[in-house]
Length: 406
Ligand SMILES: *Cc1c(COP(=O)(O)O)cnc(C)c1O
Ligand SMILES: [Zn+2]
Image 1 (cartoon, rainbow, N blue to C red):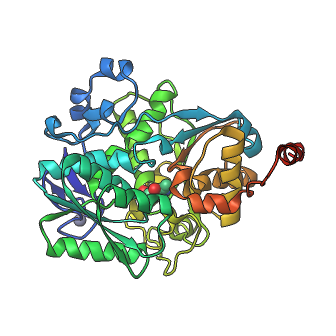
Image 2 (cartoon, rainbow, N blue to C red):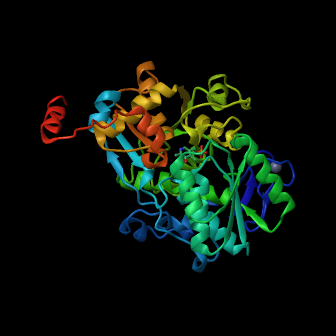
């Protein structure tokens, strides 16, 4: 295995501590030879074990498995959603519920690998910029590993649940004036100055290696079949690429056949990748002031944008944008038709799928998986805003009366 630049093809050793290509600044990716993967793969174990990130360790570039830091991430449910399928109008719909991870989002899949890598590299301090979930996850895994953790957050813009987690897990938390994109630029600069701090934003190619397991698990849970489509919300755009890579590598070693069409969803107020994909462009134009209630995807300049565009193109997928109103409606449908509580960014997948079916871009006889990236408790304020108030009753009679009106 090696690190490879997706722009200039430069190749580097797997344990080099680069975040981007030292030659051209392009994004780095971990590449395996299919023959190497085949050799590492224990097919019997693959069939026998229940899903989890480390079940697929043959595909994860960790050199010293004794250093693995795990909180039991992955192995999340893949719910078959027949009631929701009728509303969305597709034959077979599944929701991969990533809210069931240790800190309530898929970020844990990346952090178990990222923090293990930090230990391999001998780091004592780790850092990230975050809209909230990355910092919650990094703080938890750093605590488990006994590492110091520094996070930069956009002041006043982080959902309460995510902020509470970050603080309770004990991260040194710095709230900056500005949005996520500016926080990321700052922390990148800090990690250039302070070589002792290991950066664990999604630029870090090792985090994505853990997130590939969403693709592995979907195939595993569908009985080693791949769905027609996988719908993913896009913020910094690492996850859609990672999931694509998971399916790509399973296909390369013959565990499954084919790659699903990757469908990327953004919010209307932050949709640089949707514009690029629809315009047939290879480069995207950053959005200066991204806005949406879905804070996890309120990102105007996604660092992994080039990877997302590639994943969508090569898999013959597409991208679509949805309004905050559509997101709220989908959040309610997921909760009330299926009992799946998600934060707004996750609901964008169902909202987007509905739109794509209406447009005819997704056919009604297809099998679709939506990736619900984070749990409803991450953003209780937004959830309370869109639901009814509790009805107050001060006596038995009043309580009865209020029930009758349901
Ligand atoms: C991080 C995150 C996203 C966006 O993922 P990217 O890899 O940045 O595109 C979407 N939803 C939730 C809940 C997240 O935490
Ligand atoms: Zn390069």
